Amino acid sequence: MKSNKLKILNDPIYGFTKIPNSLLFDIIEHPYFQRLRRVSQMGLSNLVYPGANHTRFHHAIGCMHLMQNAVHVLRLKQIEISDEEANALYIAILLHDIGHGAFSHALEHSIVDGISHEEISLQFMKKLNHQFEGQLTLAIEIFEGKYPRKFFNQLISSQLDIDRLDYLRRDSFYTGVAEGNISSERLIAMMNVANDSLVIEQKGIYSVEKFLIARRLMYWQVYLHKTGLSAENMLVNVLRRAKELSEGGAKLFASKALFFFLNTKISKENFTDSTLEIFSKLDDYDILSAIKEWTAHSDRVLSALSNMIVNRKLLKVEIQENPFSEEYLQKKISKMMTKMEFSEEEARYFVFQKTIKNQAYNPLLPIQILNKNGKLSDIAKASDQLNLQALTKPVIKHFVCYPKQMKLAQS
Image (tube, rainbow, N blue to C red; front, side):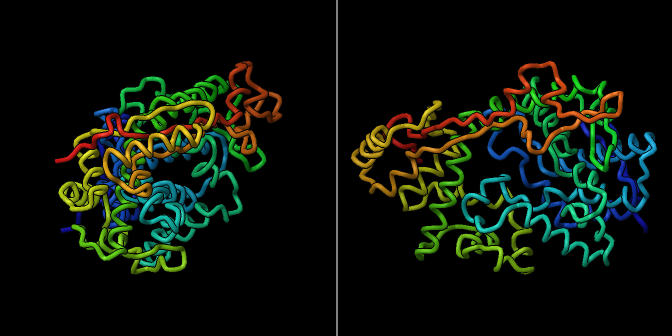
């Protein structure tokens, strides 16, 4: 029996969302895409915001819905977009995050650190293009910025792209942080094209201001929340330690896919089709089940870190404008070495310093406002909101992590 491929999904934010054709339906049904149901959109942020359990799958479907709205709006404004181009835009935005690993960014900074998620996304798209007999060729051109119509790529990747319009609103919804609740529909309604660039009409200026301020607030309150930073870095460290032990010959519980990445040094050169196939089997479930088993591992660093993550006994975080002195850090490391009888290398898994950066608006990639006289101006200059000029300056802060008590959580 032939299945009905013109499905309607019910999204908690946008309501009914259409899958516009059978090709998109088949891509969504593909195991590569279905893996995104098992990859959290916000890593371990649910340890801070209990509702933040949404996935990359939710986000990708939301992006496809918003892209349909964008194409509809631009066509109403006499911007010619063929059915083939529209379909390529839907595919490109649907697959823009398909290369994300388990817990989103943690793998990139630990066991799959020789290649970025954007490069893996492109590899997935090329593999799917082969399987779908070239039907993704135009989508790949747009994704790579090689298609002559520049504004198509800006819809996928820019400072006011469909990706951001979905994730800010979606992450705001699931975390309950109201400051990120932007009006994505209003912003899309104000979109236009001038000189082959994506622009926002003058009457949408306040919506853009709200979008940029919402982005800044979401970074400080959610994405760079100090408890979230602690959890994310502990996850990176537990995977780094597991890889170090595994490469040294230690036996560790791991699924086949996780075992491969723990025992293989990854680079762009060796990320072949067979590596991609193994990567497509790796998701949050592999990592969490391994960490639960590692709580009882004989290596004290691995078991302590694993226990702390499982039981939410996270490292304490201090944030300040200037770097912490090496003396301050060394004091905490020495204390840890004495108390836990760790080597300095082992202690540094629990005591470390890093930086965070928040730049809500990058003037080198401007959001252009289309004035009523047809002239274009950068939002930072067009706005009478003094804050916007301040948002162009990157804010860099330094943070240090260390155990709350110098006695680590053990099972």
